[in-house]
Length: 181
Image (cartoon, rainbow, N blue to C red):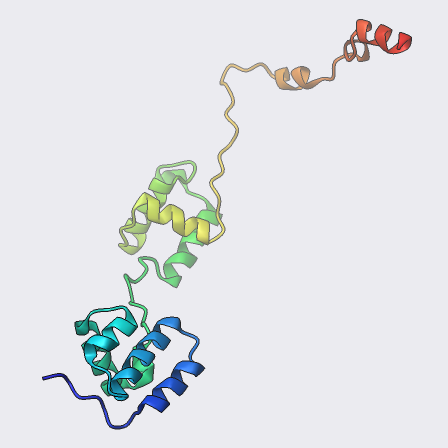
């Protein structure tokens, strides 16, 4: 025995709701249920909706319970974020202040160090990947200092960067070709 449709609605009302709707899936469901109100079988309504009879039954239950608005797909809640606003503010402040070597045991923050700091300070366990994604969303980028060899001579980089003499910039053979051509 199929679940009866609510007498609060009719085919014309469902078709009017389908015309007003901007959600394509809701329109498809409303039109399939309007066909049932007009006398079509549940199997025919399932063919109109492109689903099985069981799903049409679920649509009938949703229509009877919540009306046409119940036929809109609702988004699932999902997993709540690991870091709340107060955690993000504290993390941003810790990054801006920088680590204290005596307290934190590091001279610069790495993602793994920040994971440990979050656990120590707020008892929040976050993976490196998740924290990295959170930091990017907060506007932080991974920066590292340019490495410098411990035995590098003072002024060696500046001497290397000095411009070459003007004579070396063009080949003499090219200049000769340009003059005769």
